[in-house]
Length: 266
Image 1 (tube, helix red, strand yellow):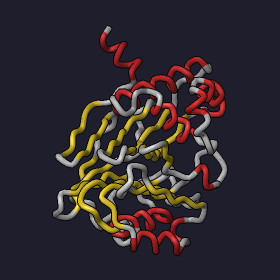
Image 2: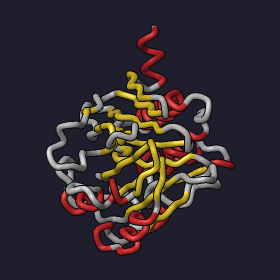
Image 3: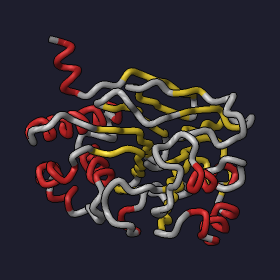
Image 4: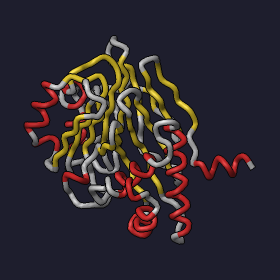
């Protein structure tokens, strides 16, 4: 599966997280330590926020470790909010449109995980999108489709609820398709103001997620795995958690799909 890193705080050079640390995202693209596969060489992407409300976006299909343009951009670009991703495909061709992050308006999104049995329910999930959301679909991945699903669930007004309701739609589609849900969801997304992350799985084995303060400027990172040497300053995010990071701090709340919430209420 993939590796990713996101940051919110005082503006820093992207290289401080993406390329410079000893176990940076570039290093994790060829020697990840906590992923199913150590190699994440099916493309990469960056989404960063600056003076405009919508993010800048750079994606390509080369392995992150072999693209000098990526290293040059990270050395020059300074941002107070960005998402970076290296891809290990679980489905979908190696193409620029299938590389994360994905964007819609001011929103950006990236994912580590998969919708198990996706090819069996892909049509049903795509048919559930509005015409406006479907028209934004550029690639063929389950991750992009899930992102478009959450944009239709009042993402701006209720980010956690939007992910919860979209997760429930995937689980329901799986059961309607005749098999038990096998959803792995460790994702980060942003509207340019706050940074959100979720760690969830339907089968008890959620991909890893960590957070840590970054330097002394009040910034905070959320990552698939620590990018420094010993990882001693990193807090593991428990499974079934939703993380909200703002300029005034961080909260971690329990996360369950909307359908499960209703069942528990009954």
